[in-house]
Image 1: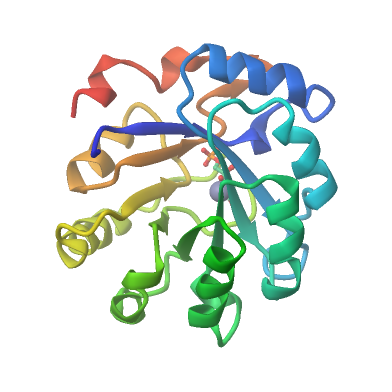
Image 2 (image 1 turned 45 degrees about the vertical axis):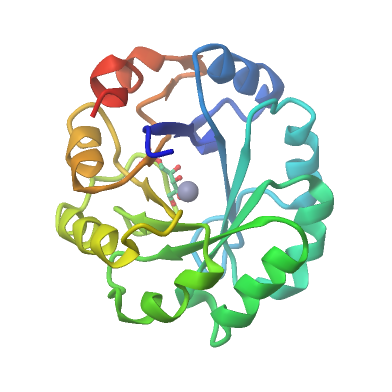
Length: 218
Ligand code: DX5
Ligand code: ZN
């Protein structure tokens, strides 16, 4: 189905209260829970690994979407499957063998996501669509929450939706999504919206900032 899904990123949650924060966003109507894994190598920031993701799993009752900003990916696929990830998203820029990586993610029993940095074009995606359940268009350079939305990516989303045609592939958007930018990306063809700093503010959940009929109705 092509209704808009909201996936709050717990990167902006209170790191000392993940269980409570996950329950709060689900109570507010989160469709998915987005988990940002960073390795201090592929991106200049470090977050959490498989044991933490496994601990989050006990609190997530919806769908746990794990965004890997790590390189290499393949040695860790089994660990994230064991941790309970429903979907594992790998960056096309993370190594030379993204085709094999996507096969391995599906082979481990998870949905496979393919992420593109803002500077990466759509050409290579055409050869990967049959292996992909979701394409993640980054609208900031990955590494940190709270950055400014990069407008040039809206046209990329539009062209990607045309490429996908009637295949059952989600388009996720991540970075700078708020009440101003969410309608732009939804109209361009995105159907899964990640939001970190717009949802979590100082440990409390400001769901009204991003949820609402105005977004879901697009
Ligand atoms: C960025 C992460 C995002 C981030 C989004 O590297 O992948 O998921 O948490 O945060 P906001 O919504 O604050 O841009
Ligand atoms: Zn993310």
